[in-house]
Image 1 (cartoon, rainbow over the protein chains, first blue to last red):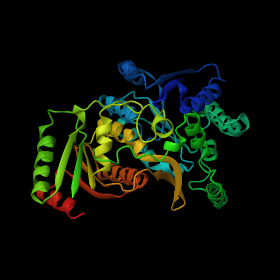
Image 2 (spheres, chains in turn purple, orange):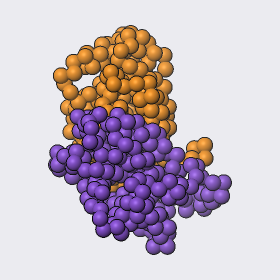
Image 3 (tube, rainbow over the protein chains, first blue to last red):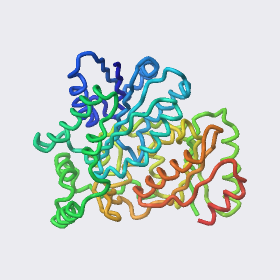
Amino acid sequence: MRLTIFNGSPRGKSSNTKLLMDQFTNGFCESAVSEVETVYLNRTKELPEQVDLFKKTEHVILAFPLYTDAMPGLVKAFIEELEPFCGRSGNPSIGFVVQSGFPEPNHSRFVERYLEKLSRRLGCRYQGTVVRGGVEGIRIQPNWMTRKLFKNFYELGKKYNEEKGFDREVMRKLAPREQLSKGRLLFFRLLNKAGKGNFYWDMQLKQNKAYEKRFDKPYQSTD
Amino acid sequence: MKILILNGNPDPNNTLFEEYLADLTEEMHALDNEVRQIKLRDLNIRYCTGCWGCWVKTPGKCVFPDDSQEVCREYVHTDFVLMASPVKMGFTTALLKKTQDRLIRILHPYVDLVENECHHHRRYDEYPKNGLLLERPQNIDDEDIQIMKDMYSRFSLNFKTELTFFGLTAQDVKEVARAIDNI
């Protein structure tokens, strides 16, 4: 089978989306009979060739981070280019991976409905949408913290090849509950009380000597 | 009331849409509102690169100074923002969406719990109410409309406000102006 992954992260090759999809690809490539190619939508000059790839491939995965509760602008620009293919026979099947910085999968469920409808609009067989929260920060997390997440994406890729689609059980493991559990809510509140809830951002603000300016309102004055 | 229209129509030849917004502006003026329309297609607005410079390097400002600065400044100084867009492939245009992405700097990276769900902390004391006005092509059904309404309600929730108006350009322009004026 021939799979094309469209990475819709504005960060392209240095994206968290790539870290996840690399694991997926590793799992997918365990079986040698398949071909997989990844293209990066942030290389906007390559858009015509990327649209052409959509036309030729058998299976598509469009993976992106949630930006202001929807797809990033550049992903929407790509989707608009697909308009001529609506209802075309021979369209690839399509699946989606949506990851968010917010920990709850719930944030991504709204765009998920759009994506499911988009598959129908295009006339592509819909493979499903894999949703994963809490992804911001995985680049700096130690191995033990990302091991399970990466293993699940590896499994997702491996089974994708065998089952020609996303494995529902692995999807569930990646989004075990829609909202934070009572335990995590308590942990979050305690962390905030101790002033440590935002350490990820504070650390970067301090590194950049911008910590004192963190509450700046540069557009407040009208002049 | 101070009203900002973000015109997300990329196509200057779509004169029906442009005329509708011009008429709407006039009607809302007549109801004593201060209205400013920004035609996003005339501005130089690049895609957000997701660098988080606006959160951790130059708090509240984007490290790429382009016309999105003007949009952000207007946005935080208005009472109501009408996001106006033709519908393309079941959603608002990439032109409007890329502009929304660049608004992230007016929020703070810190996270608060809002009804037990994580949302961004406010950077400014006040945020304008939101409205959505769509030009509906024939291939759009009620389900598409509901999906967009729900997605924009989520956007508003994250941007410390509410989606208080939804309309279609097929509606009478006077009626739409009155509905917005009543918010």
